[in-house]
Image (cartoon, rainbow, N blue to C red; front, side, top):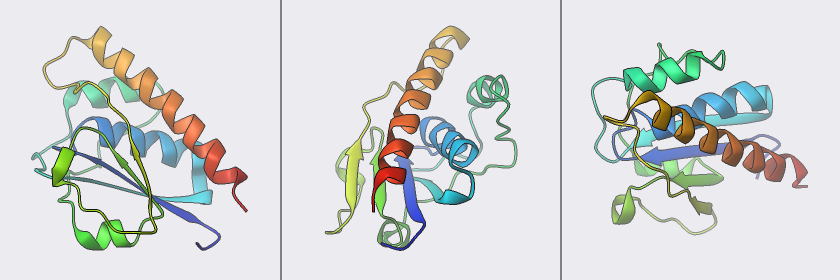
Length: 135
């Protein structure tokens, strides 16, 4: 692994959970990490409610676009964090795989989306601590 770890967040539509996690890691990790996100069946736009609750945290996802998961993205990553994509996520040896079982924010009330956001933030903070403590 190089000096800068690469983290890939994966969910089904790449429009909510994975985008919020990527937003937090970019915000909290700065230049110390490279952040990717993708979906097994990407949507056409970021979930507006996810964008709204992240903006409450000072993180703007308005320029983010859902992207399709590719083998290349997984190969380029040191960490692959899955969030409900199940068997559709490819597996390559030598990567650190973590599964974060998180509710999908799609069609949820804002209070529930905030709860999901806060859960994601806690997980990203713990992940960042792990990444920065590795030799």
